[in-house]
Length: 455
Image 1 (cartoon, helix red, strand yellow):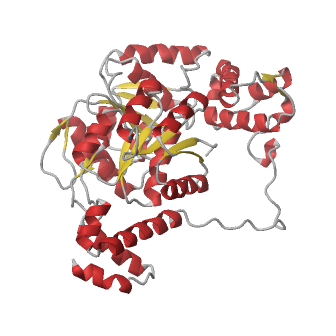
Image 2 (cartoon, rainbow, N blue to C red; image 1 turned 180 degrees about the vertical axis):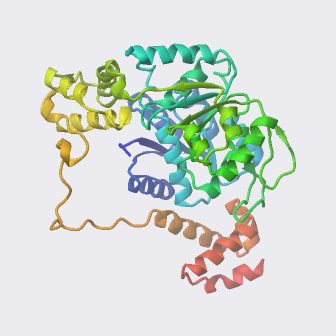
Image 3 (cartoon, one colour; image 1 turned 180 degrees about the horizontal axis):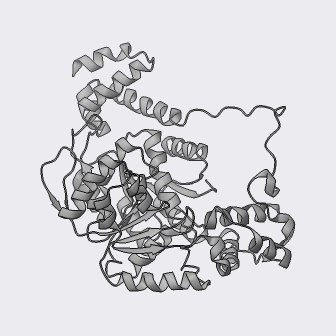
């Protein structure tokens, strides 16, 4: 996860600790703030990849903090968490600049899926205060991107994984007339197929098991702005037909809904595959291909943009150690220039991070440059005789335990399922479902029978 930093702003110390533990177990650097004032201080002294904030806090609340952060650092994704969810509140939060809106209680998997999507997207390798386009081929593509940005046509960006496709997509959005409207990205390869349709199109309350509140899809959230379908070739062919209809009709219906929602969205798609070959193999619809491939851009791999390697290296040195003037000597430069970079810009970023850890002084040398894989001199795998690593607790365990505590405490305090559900900000039906789940997991809820029946 490359230690992406996530700031958790939560006045409840127990919940804050649970969220941070879950993030740390998933490879993130979790930072804590108990109020908005502390959170704003982090903006002055730390680079943040994501902010997760509770809405209800003393002093400056989460909605107000969102506005302050967007004014000061608009590039940082911001997520609001609340116990009182509604479609109106969610839409207002999105319009104010929130990247997502989550209702308590929620599963740990939901949290991590969201953080994976937002924190990783916020740190696109090329897009850190402007693109690195020193190589002639990169400059040519940047010029084309500026020209197509002035229009409203759909763009298809192809290229290998890690080469910077999403960065160019953001560049097009930023240079378009829609730059003051949302830029919404969805990684089609990272989301399980059963979830992708509901995330793209949204859903109404009760549309399926677990749909306890209505939720706007990516198309709705991008209305007026730009929607990036990252790795669009990974979409199942059955869902491709529904996507085609939305693009053709310029309107979307939420799952379980009957109202057509008009769309004004600029589409950008990316792929690391040859889509013509995918069409020929029957894995990608030909009609959808022509809808998306209106203006094709191909981004060459880093090994074909040699003049970008050293400028990117210096950008990463500044990014990871901004307070020190780290130098890189000639031997290290030659080592970087001679490498094949099968992992593209993403691999270069990892190599520079390792070099900064290994260097002994203020200069990076060839000895500090470690490429991936034992054949390239990377550290060998751990021997079989090494002490076995202590297994980490399951990802969801902390949040689930905390959820049980909160729900059972509410039932004890109010003596009625209806009153407890109202206090928790969930429906009685959801509370019944949660109690049934606890029983399935082996928890004895018989001591709460009176409270549940009393409602």
